[in-house]
Image 1: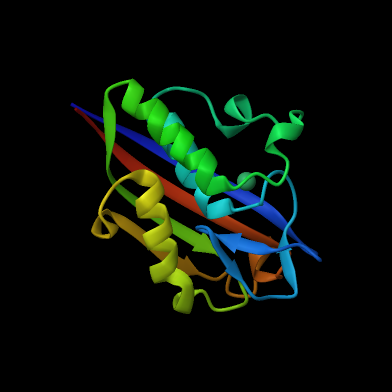
Image 2: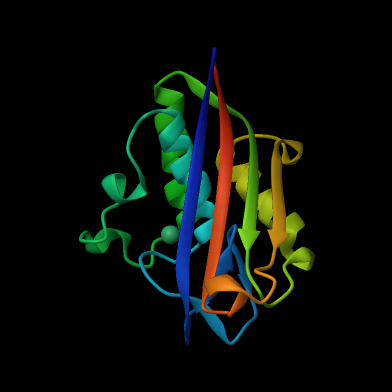
Length: 158
Ligand SMILES: [Zn+2]
């Protein structure tokens, strides 16, 4: 038995914030604003797992209003949700994700993102796909104002 889930996340880019995607800190003048460490890619994957479980979203499990999750390591939050799936009898089969950012180029960081995510997801690196896209100079991503991510996850009943 399988369950499928979809996730999406966007963060505004701001000065003096770290740019963290898939647990990798990417050197840049701007970073993700907002809750936790602002890791949009990891948030999208976490939401996709919660979606596959029909367990609400990230904000339900780790609310902004709770200072415990301020600047939280998003890979840690992902691990907690993978554990929740495990408790429901599910394991991750594979993940496919897009991360949309105009600058800087993400390609040099993709392999490390996949390794970090695979560890948190408790799967082989070959089960985690991360694709980098730009906004082609249009919309909030294209204008360098935001970073976005999309993810689809398949869970397998153990
Ligand atoms: Zn987020």
